[in-house]
Length: 319
Image (cartoon, rainbow, N blue to C red):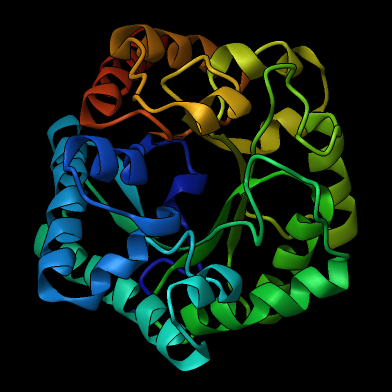
């Protein structure tokens, strides 16, 4: 059942969490090989399916413990044509993998959802190229055509929405939004930034959101920031304007390392979970509509627990 497609509950004031850094958790903590960071490839057999089931279930249990909702992102960040082809997937088998990923999350929702913990299911898209570099950019029309099949596949399932994470230039974001609108799917757009708070394309975060809003008539359900440490974008959030109210989600990295440094790292920098939680709490003062809280590279359940603790306390104090 398309339970929340026409009424996303995270657009209200209640707090929702997401998972942490799926790929870095699987690689560094679980010792699982993930070629090209492609977690969806685990869906090829029962063992991989079970691994992902248990991974996401851990976060659902955290959400239930705190009385928060949760947005479950399908493990399909790499399940697009270019990355899929590197692993031997064609259009048919790639669509099957995307459908199976949503099926995994539907099983979890059926088993664990409660009135206090609504579970929103999102079909996740990643960038066509490297999320850390904007050296190969598509036009809006090419981005629409490229991402349309994955979005249409999600639209044919019981997914509630689609989301695109780690986007590093505006044209790809706009093409994705236009494809989502054509498929009548709610869409969340997440930009990543460098240590100076600018997108890898050089655009300011405010500019990226404002242009996407203008080009799509405000169709985006909400925006997020992901794959950057809070110290990288906190200054950018000082720029005033309505655009800040459109940011409803945050999935930060645990590490202060730059994208280039992360690319070259052989180890995992988990930072300080408690300090990250405190930074999220402070960011809620800059982002008044921030309700979707999770992690990205280097984060795991410990970081999400710390974020829950810090932001729950913030809510209690505010009340």
